[in-house]
Image (cartoon, rainbow, N blue to C red):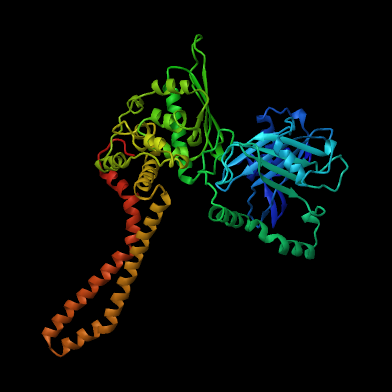
Length: 556
């Protein structure tokens, strides 16, 4: 990466050629690819309290995407100051669940653990000294492997690929050692270059083909090779398997699903209403876990009194799964208690800077629908759909880490309080939240059905929906085939005319009746052909048609 004067406007969002490239959106914080690599690096360092004057440029060592596919368990950022000295490194770790953690190292921690003595004796000690070496040790707080807990620490020993400014033959040689909580070396991983650096843009056609044929399979085989080794460790070594905990507020959750992105919009508007109904002035910084809207500020619009200070609250959604879990709770306070405050750190889907202020906000913002000031009238059919949601509401799935803990399982198995509708339901049912009603009902119904009948997987409901559509299509095809077969066997029209000319009225009457039967088969086939469309209409459009003829003043 060059100096920021050349790429500060985001021109470096894509690097490489068409068949092998890296994208800025895949590194550091999610999204914001318009900033480019340099802009994202600058923003991240600022978030870590690193002044812009303390660094000048950086280099990234990572596995590029080959034909659009890439998976990077770990990437290394080398950060240099204006004197071309390696002052910091960023180790960016990804797991197979799509979660991410960046560790920023400044080399200030002395590597003097007993485990390093064993490492030096293993022959992996780097033969460099002075400014050409970067070493550091830091605590592990991110789940990577199911065979290792989140405890322990990492030790990094890395060579400086550019010991001085005019160095033109970079050498990569990094060694990471996993130190267990009992202070012994549990795993040693090494990344090193084996030849001179190649510039893809300078390769000829023959050299490019040779390179592609030699390395195309490496990236595609990363995950399968992980699975193979994990299977061997589980079966042959019988290693203990650690359930995946939720990421801490220092990490980045997985990419959200379309359902979670829709529920985020409802949740954001709901929090906006809570803040503006509060008598106390609030300012909430919401870290959403949505790449396109990573941070939102929700603040009171009215001016606080002189003796009232604006209360500042920071809320971080650790994983997008929070949004799909939030709709299961009848009370907002219960959702925050069980997803953040009164739960184990491994199971938290939310982090709140000052929980006591959150309790004040919720207690001051009750009766959302009553406070809307507008009564929303609904048709009988719409009320039935809302009552179905109320009937289907159930507790969310147990966190993965809580399955094996009976106490946690009992604490989250039942909703100990009841309410005709949840507080989020009341908001969506109100005049202010009516814009989300249709999509909200569809999503929430699907989530509740999945939890009750699909083992918590919404994909199961999608599969059942597809199966119904496929069955209707098969019935339509069978109807058409059967009708055509009957018509070809009897040649209905010609036979009827011949019987009529011969004067056999009895046979003619019989034939006419059979002809009508065939026509009924045709009608049935047509109905079967349109059954798939009618099935879709029954889910999406019938409510609108009924509400059109209803006498409701406001319909949602």
